[in-house]
Image (cartoon, rainbow, N blue to C red; front, side, top):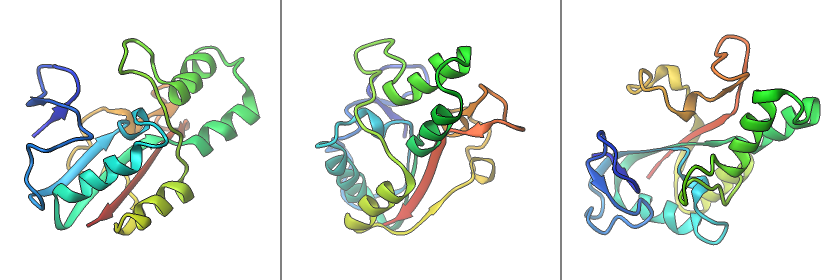
Length: 167
């Protein structure tokens, strides 16, 4: 089931993805959230992760993709924002969101050590990076495949931190 905060043709249920009361405890095998968690604030995101853990079955997988703040900082340090589309639109969009509507703002940043620490603290296990090319949804072009320069998946830098853990 595809849950989203906004109606689109591919969305099954329009709802707040941070509050899944309509889904019973321990019923989901997989929760896949691609560039979603950063839309929750620094005092909200833990509750969202806990809610997602609640609906996962024991052994179920939480697969996350978030903007990789460490990759953004590295690219900014090396090139700044003077790199046209890859700088101004790419880096700023990854850090601040696209800001195309009221829901398209980023409120949180993550790097691997921090997100891993938070997941472990909430009881997730087996936390590891996942490769977007080796998933059942590899054919879906989403932000887990976010590279700068834009769409340069051969020599570009992956700007998405892709981590998963099990309940």
